[in-house]
Length: 188
Image 1 (cartoon, rainbow, N blue to C red):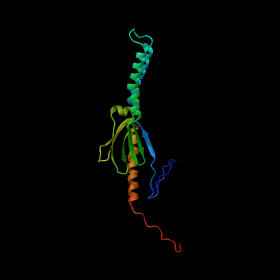
Image 2: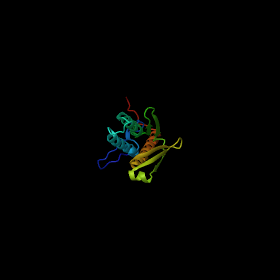
Image 3: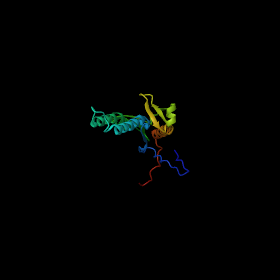
Image 4: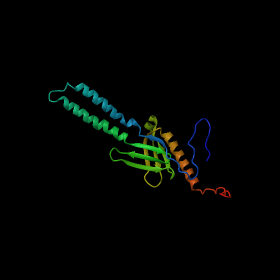
């Protein structure tokens, strides 16, 4: 395999046959943050309502009740959705795709590039508007790995196609027997 040259853009050198390749992280991302839109609106509305009604409540209600209600609303409708979004990551390395989700109990799924898989890009109207998409990675064995609402979906699709191709080329090359080396020098 030759190394491309030109324009000052360099790729990592391919390792010699039989040498293990280091695993490098290419992409670590989360689903698009647009799902937090409603949480942001709730936070703004809760802050505005609390500021307006604090000190102006009718007789049977007290300020601590307002603050407790606002705190509960913010916790349930803002903080929890944010933590769920924050706890869901997709990592693409030079060897595999990893999906991790969960706050307390982590669940993880991996798909290796060397096995190969079909990559399907789905983009609805809103996803096209936001520049996102859903990638389905199907290796034909288990259920497909769905990378939902990923930003820059077209670019991630191209990266995955390249990584599958490179990993399969390297696996095929490493499966071939090495040619015999030169004969040893006499007297050594």
